[in-house]
Length: 374
Ligand code: SAH
Ligand code: SF4
Image (cartoon, rainbow, N blue to C red):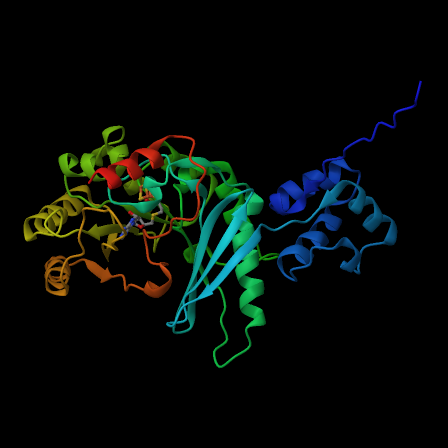
């Protein structure tokens, strides 16, 4: 009988999946001291090093040990698309699915818009990500890997303007609170002084209103919160943001109020995508003012003129209508900003992120069918 060599397949642990605390726990599990974890954490996130061989302050023995059991792998960039206005979009391969990351420079600020899921389960009526269906949650490595990738890519672009990531918004593809643990760990890394060192005011999570997870976030993180409201009453919000049927505006506002009470400068940003003749009438502005005042949530409002994509029935309102809506809110005493559309030429604007989702929900097929029948 012939001997068959049984090759043991060793699955290596990707250290990019760990926040500092988890990396220390991992190092303890392989009998290494916490300060070694700190060193490796800095190499990965501050210096962008993925090869243990290049981590020069580790002993040769430790480097070899790590090489045997671990690896540092960032997700693969398949397309790197700069826009005429300085915006930058990366298409990132996460095991056959593609997600998008967008960098938006504005003066001295550079905001990175990060994805949290491949697609989204929540199916808001106006959102192109929702139409793509859903495949899976991203891992910590795939979420923080977007920051890692952008920071590295921008540092290589030496030019007229130095580009840095000064802010991160979890506003790319997906609903971050539906991927709670991975998103919280990734945000911890963003705010860690041994990694990206962003202050909690510069890391913003945007949610469509997964109320129980807002309470969890309050316990576990300290990031800024943006809430996608889009409608001033339940009837309209049920239509636009279906999760409202599960957690209505009253429940959402109660969670927001508590979140805002954590300390000074903790107001909630309410995002309101303006869709012509759907939610952009003065009546809606009036109702919005009454709602926010009655709930006493410290609030600022970010108006996002709808960004169209093929097949959507919604329309972007005229500039006049948009400014009229803003004016009403400001006269009522609210800070209300209009989000500028950036990266239009590379489909990088809010709600245009589509990536490539191997859909497990049949929603994508249904949507495609409805387009071809229309
Ligand atoms: N799932 C999260 C974060 C991702 S969406 C959320 O819903 O908050 C980021 C923002 O873009 C949300 O406010 C979302 O409602 C908005 N958006 C989605 N599609 C849009 C579109 N086509 N035009 C303008 N804004 C859109
Ligand atoms: Fe998901 Fe946000 Fe799009 Fe709604 S708006 S479908 S929650 S990504």
